[in-house]
Length: 330
Image 1: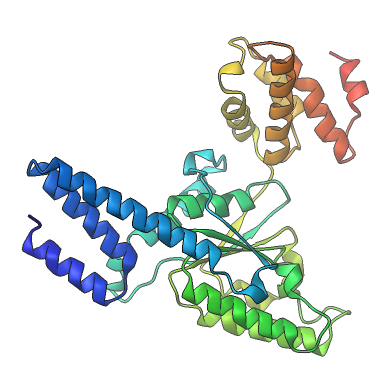
Image 2 (image 1 turned 90 degrees about the horizontal axis):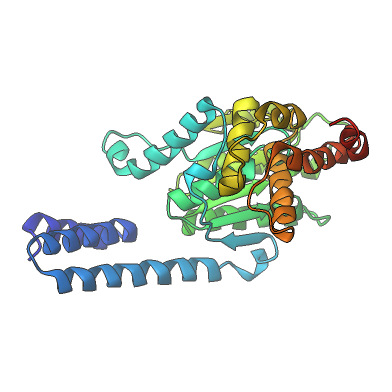
């Protein structure tokens, strides 16, 4: 049977309403029973825990207040940390967020708190949204994507009320909350088009972020950090700056996406030169286009030449050299 310490810990977690801690301890009891040769009991406990976690996540996704339903998209991402291809510095800082969350009880014993307010800045397609999805998966939390621009209304006081409801949801339902296009809410107070209502909204936002102390993770994302009010920056525990992928990162993106279709004599020099200046998302999209073309032609391998047209199309999409020009110069 479970040890005395395990039973006491289960009782403490139950009365402190720490359901995740309770389920973790239950799995420890299952492991203990398995070591004692009580296989059927251990299996039954694991099944109970799995069902409890599944039910809790389903309720979390379904219980978004009606008034916020159109503003929040709920998801349970299945994107592991290995899916992120970023610089070593960014990967280290993201791993630190994950590690601190998992050890948050240990930090609390020393009157410390885990990193839970992150500001992600950088060009589109460089991995900011993907980072939020990875965090949700690795921390076993639902992802709530908040459309920051939709929080804004033309009616006096309504935006502030919605903001208050949003932070109440953050406090009541643990999860990863991604505020996309955060500059729509956090724009500087000195801009020419500023109005009194926007100043009040920004002041409220500053207060809500600073006062937020739940275990939820807040991820604010913006492509235009220069538009943010400077006072916002010090409200975040970490500011992560994303950039276009370097050669090493583009190579990993191509290898990960093409997988077994990658030719053994793949011309990396050509592919890396053709992909210079593209975002991570654009490189992945080009690789997927090449994969689709290969599948439709019944090919089993993709060379750098096969990837040239998809990469050129992505470059052309934001003012680069046209695909036809690229194809004329093999």
